[in-house]
Length: 140
Ligand code: SF4
Image (cartoon, rainbow, N blue to C red; front, side, top):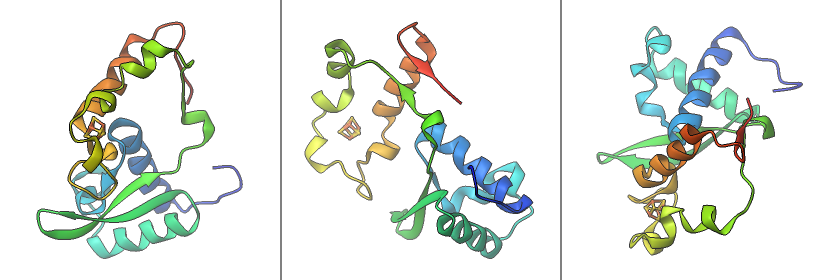
């Protein structure tokens, strides 16, 4: 976040979105008030703060439908320091669940099957992270 100044409220919200992005690939805006850190904010305050983070280029927001209602999927735009570095080896590539997934054709952002909400992909990434092999480095 070099060069971007945030208010205390924006910082708090950004930290929640960042944590959820790293853990789950993002978070629904409609769920934000469920997090203890954000329980003192009402939905309108949260919506305003989200918009500010979007304008500052720290959060990506895309409309999705959840249980028949419109909301947004929020993802923190992580710096390169938050990315996973993984050498490209064929064993790593063929282990990605998408290669054998029968939903691949229908899987897309905003659809029911989506990489940002996929339990198979999440489990795969968590397994890689938990192995902490010498060939995989996670930088924060
Ligand atoms: S993200 Fe999940 S649902 Fe989509 S193709 Fe990959 S494994 Fe299948």
